[in-house]
Image (cartoon, rainbow, N blue to C red; front, side, top):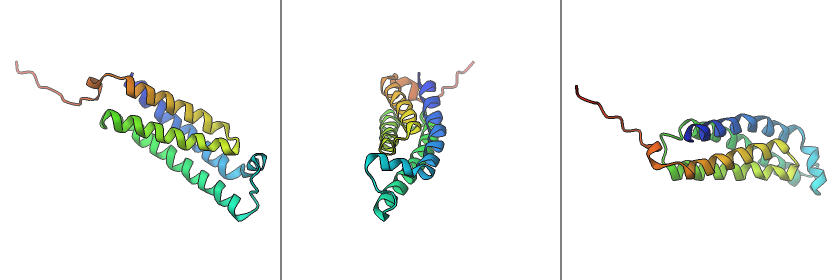
Length: 128
């Protein structure tokens, strides 16, 4: 179950990179929500969401690769935080952000449900 959570986190980070690019290129979609993207404040919000999604996607890839090395609580909370960061992209009507957010939410549930012995990296040497 933990391997599937790792795959979900890494794939969510990979799908998050196009979501971040869409945040930068498709900022005109933000006018649907009533934001004036031509104003400096509106553009600052769109830029903040783009940088937030870039950070969340890179963090998701890094934490996803190290899920077994990190503790259960740290990995699960990180997945929930990154899921929330991608969920903020719905302000721009960015559907790719929703996909990444749902994948990270599923990964967080899988991490919290996984037994604690899957996180142990202790290897014993058997004497012959």
